[in-house]
Amino acid sequence: MPEGHSVHRIARQFERNVVGRVVAASSPQGRFVEGAAVLDGREAIEARAVGKQMFLAFEDDVWLRVHLGMYGAWDFAGEIVVDPTIASANGRMGHTNQRGTEIAPIYDAAGENSLSSIGAPRRARGRVRMSEQTTGLGDDGAAEDGGWPPPVVGQVRLRLLTDVTCADLRGPTACQLRTPEEVQATIAKLGPDPLVDDVTEGEERFAATVRRKPTAIGLLLMDQSVVSGIGNVFRAEMLFRARLNPHTPGRDVPEETVRELWRDWVRLLAIGVETGQMMTMDDLDPEAWRRAMAHRDDRHWVYHRAGLPCRVCGTSIVLEEMASRKLYWCPNCQR
DNA sequence: TAATTATGACGAC
DNA sequence: TCGTCCTAATTAC
Picture 1 (tube, chains in turn orange, yellow, brown):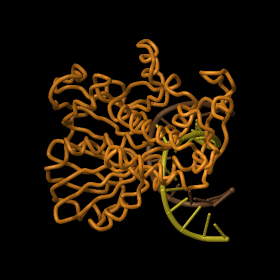
Picture 2: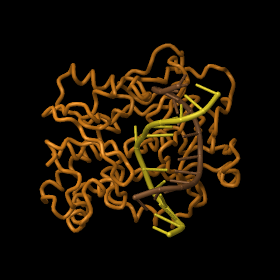
Picture 3: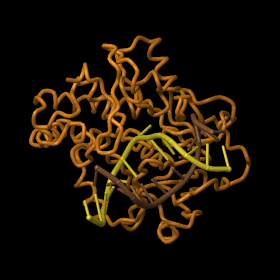
Picture 4: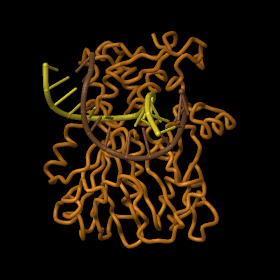
């Protein structure tokens, strides 16, 4: 269930571990057999993330488009080269379960220590799930059942295998082959992504769009044609950080506030890509930061805090449905 | 063991 | 505004 930061991290994993290699592709689940057959034996050329979508280019202009939707995830296994940028925040790579507990760290080749945070990319042996969910792999994170390739567990739509790395895709909303033109068309419909587009241009585009719409800002932030990569968590948090009422029509949001929203997204996305977590409470003292990183419940201003006192004013956080998604906000702070 | 939940998005009314 | 699709962890019973 990733928002934009996760998809960018996944694309980096593909760049590190799959791009430049020939893949063996299969669809153990059986629902992408024809597509996998086309990919099989091709070299991966490029990995690109835009908003919540990832595009993998293969030889001969064959592109794979993947959208994880609510439940999708990539599981990496085998020898995994870890991007030092990605590994830096936690000192090791891994993702969090619902409680925010670090799980499935990658272990080094000796299977002993988790990766250190500094230095060149390193090879590791183990597994990593590229989403925010727990893997059920166990806390030791080891994939030491010996066999290669790893046994298929559950519903694997697509398996991409290099000589040393295994990437399993499960539960995606979209997994399809596309032509370069189709990829371009898809990307063209998306709003600016701070990690793809020039941030200044992005700000102009975002501000111009928002300022001419009568639609509630709470809806606009989730609209991928307005801005790419924001999901339900970042939406709620950004609105609180801006002290903005989610129901304010886009065109009524002060220009400077709209621009501040964009700049906030630039900042939060960068933090998200570095840490792998949606840390929306910055300006914390070291102890509070540690707590926030360790426990998901300590990480947000309003998300998932219905009925709890606002961290700023004590008012009970409201939960309401907006376009059939849960929206959390403080009716006192966000006027 | 079953029900619930989830960080998405699309299409039919 | 609904229903639908996709999967697995967590919670309820």
